[in-house]
Image (cartoon, rainbow, N blue to C red):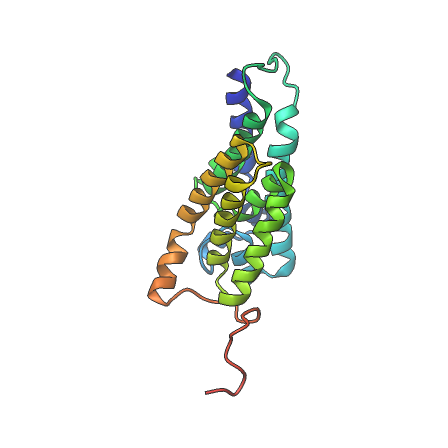
Length: 216
């Protein structure tokens, strides 16, 4: 169990390196004080521009992939691989640690992003087909509603449902996907509340049902 605990901790510390906050330190900005207050790609795009947002998403996806694909097989001096821990459960725990680190980052006062990009990075490593399904759902919901938070939440839920009913998905993968859907939904609870109140902003340029110019 020492290998499991140590690698999950390392994954959490890796996840705690939040792209928007790391880049913001070099630019002297903290996007948690701007826009929606979220340290994620959408708020980075709205407040800092495309380059900042692209770098943010690259870092957040990359650390998720590293945690799920590279970390489980990492040889740590003095720590032998534990034969009692299944490799798929080890990868799932490392992936979960990275997403949790992004949401509650140690290095940034436990105030991070909402986990969508990091979750995507872990799925890229663990189950690319689930990532394709999740991205398809994300694009569809975004085009139909123009709510990024709703699109991200439903994409995570869709991935969990797909994993649950897929004959190829292991129990570890299904459990991971379900837990992450719950975490992403929890992280977006503010967005969902603002949607109910009618105050959540839309991405109007992508919304299929946006009012036409000049329409009344």
